[in-house]
Image: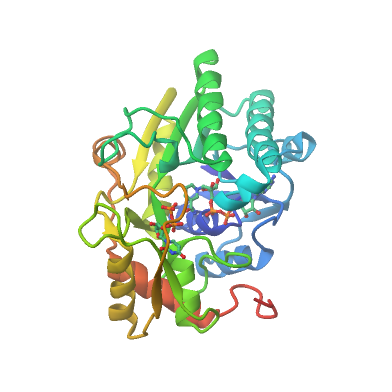
Length: 342
Ligand code: NAD
Ligand code: UDP
């Protein structure tokens, strides 16, 4: 099959591109490099031993999308394109709504024109309301998001579900990711955040490689076994494999289906720090700071539905996630751009 990856040069998109090509699919990537670079795609091609077709394009621009749909017979779209920094979304909500909602609308409109009927969407565990008990199931209430980024995901899920209700031929798969970390085991591709990382694992690995002084753990007074927050960390390669299964499912079904992509096993911030130190042999100095606004004590998946329906489950553990993150970070201390100044 031929799959269009909107935002496919980014962290999750690049790993998914590789796994799709390894599974025998053809990949077309459209990305404006807002948070990524061409080097990532070059390395994916090297690892795959095949070429993904690359368009430098803003996915909001319908003419750019029309050209892609004219030049390729696309079987399925995977929509990764979006802005994803929670704190930035609070400061620049309009930019977030404009980019994330418009990419979705432009994709749906041009897919309809081109007769493309299958779309998989990168959603997030953040759409679950904070009052839900853990583990989170797909049927639980959504809403009460704590920031504009979360609301964009909530709204895009709604838009996609409404589109599928109006077009019985449309197949929509909403994938709710938990906490993707790790990298391809070669260390050639990985997560390359711009500026100071917001997320835990890139922060840890930048401390380990000497780019940052120490980690600040946001609070140790939560109602969890060691007082630090617990999350469902998932290896990005497992997540990528989940997309391969989702594509195979999407093309055979109609309507909307929602899947959690997580491991179902939570780890605390302190457990992640210790696992990183153990699997890499590198110390990660940390201090305990105040809680971060909007953080929940615990967030983890019930991932039974993805196993039952997609036949997918994770196979990589926390040690693999830490080792592969470190392998990427130490080979690429400044990410894809060695001249980067931060
Ligand atoms: P990323 O920033 O690495 O990838 C997103 C890609 O989209 C980037 O390459 C960026 O340049 C591109 N992009 C953004 N706006 C675009 C536009 N208008 N036109 C074309 N390209 C555009 O992020 P990621 O971690 O790979 O996340 C992929 C998707 O998964 C995002 O939608 C994100 O919100 C979602 N998600 C990520 C996480 C996570 O923790 N990484 C968790 C849940 C959901
Ligand atoms: N965290 C932390 N220090 C950091 C970054 C994150 O203590 O510098 C904690 C954060 O409070 C949360 C967990 O690590 O409990 C995961 O945070 P991340 O931002 O990676 O993901 P989230 O689950 O918030 O989307």
